[in-house]
Length: 285
Image (cartoon, rainbow, N blue to C red; front, side, top):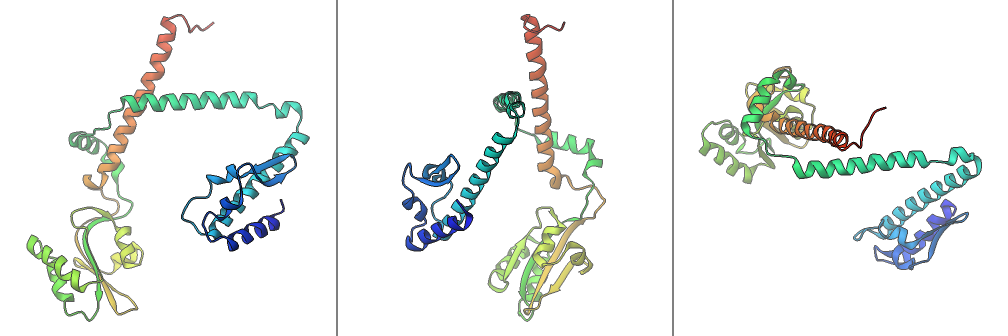
């Protein structure tokens, strides 16, 4: 089906029928919606593609994309069938290799899922961290901070700055409370290490620019709308230094679990060969 015809047909449907299932209501079970050579595309092949809750225009667009992709695939299939030799069209070896690879992968996934211990203790994290500190050198600074965006002329600006920089828990709670009614945005990252780039995104600048504005423990950057973004930096570790263990914790857990998974698969490979040898099913001539 020519592309412009596809667009025209489905545009009419989308305009006439208000339902997001405009195309489905038009295409009945078993009805052909496109044809290329001896190939036919049916409604059932489009049904799962078009989700509920989208506009008729989006339904039309998705159907058009699928139809054109389908037609391209079939056109390549036909020309390949015509132009390739019998030997070139024989893909049985490749299919069997793919089948074997897929079966192995699925069994490995099942084997690992049934045996993998995903519990990682704090002691295990600490041991790995202390043994691999050279692997945790920071590419960018990480920091703990409190952030707010507030009108430059807000009467509470200086009060919140003072409270948010306090080490007293009651002051920190008060900062949050006052900011709730005065600031456009207030975030407390003071208990969690974060990448400097993440904080810089709150300022709308890159982290180098953000840190160049750092004055003591504060960073202040005004915008063009009469507001100012303020961050109190409670702690920071510079680029090139070793990342805090808390910042690396989730990554370390993933590494440990990945190592366990690799060990399980290595054991599986060895056990399969040993079992086959014991049973006389594996011989090398």
